[in-house]
Image 1: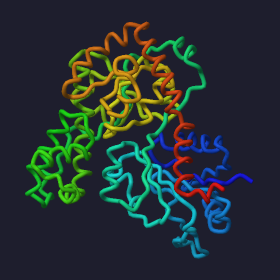
Image 2 (image 1 turned 135 degrees about the horizontal axis):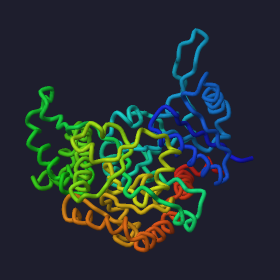
Image 3 (image 1 turned 90 degrees about the vertical axis):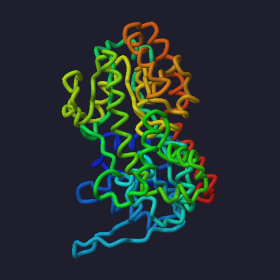
Image 4 (image 1 turned 180 degrees about the vertical axis):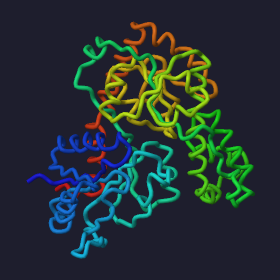
Length: 405
């Protein structure tokens, strides 16, 4: 009899989460497991109750459970009076928390890392996050596992033969007209940290690194290399990320517009920016519509959103849909793909001039198609959901071999 895997997620979240959850669940199923996919917010909670009952009553039949962020960590039960009460889950069943963001995006990862589950593995989209987790959550098992790309139903030849009326497509929301440095607001009580945080933010403006690596670099310049100094700055990770992410997005668009490169944007709040009239702004779309727009684009422009030593689904999905990629620099992506042959990298320092390569990418079909073919082959070999499912199952089998006997 096949072992079962329960996958917990929710449709009530970022539009990319549920479709990618389904892709991951399908890949786990293709690896030889019976998969139960549970939307924790479905009407009447019937599937949730069924999965919780199975977890409590038939734990030996389940290899592991998986949830997006904190989904599935808690197993509430509905009593006859209509109130929820927590129900403990069997300690022997491992649980995977699959993160779609950094572990210090506290609003997105709320409650996930504080859970005291004994067999708990956290997946991370960026290798620098492993350092963060080792320092602040040494009790957790960790696995570097970026979100994979969504495959197209068509092959590369058909994808390249399709008309692509959109030149450059940028898929990201703007978090506000002006970026906010929280440590300069009146409610910030630790005034002694302001000079240090200013230097860290300035470092991140010109270096393509994650928040964690930037903090360590600035501390090193001050001779503060001992872990205790980094630990003291844990409350500052989120405010720094909250500042640098929109800063980089607005800076990236300004570089494009200064070079007179037309941009199609998908995402919220761009209409409020000073340069909105220079953009072609698409309304908010669901995931299927997002894929359709990628299929119509010659190239996608991607900021890394804090994954400067990792990757995310937009890069891999674009490659698997025959779309060229211009990406903010990532050390991991630079190891997986050859710069200027498979992908074009930019940043806000020495690689800023690479923006000038985009007009050729959009106008020279032969040049673009050579890049697209090479990227497609590498993404197909290493960055589909079946690759991620295999890595995840291998990790769990090494940690908990008895669950797979």
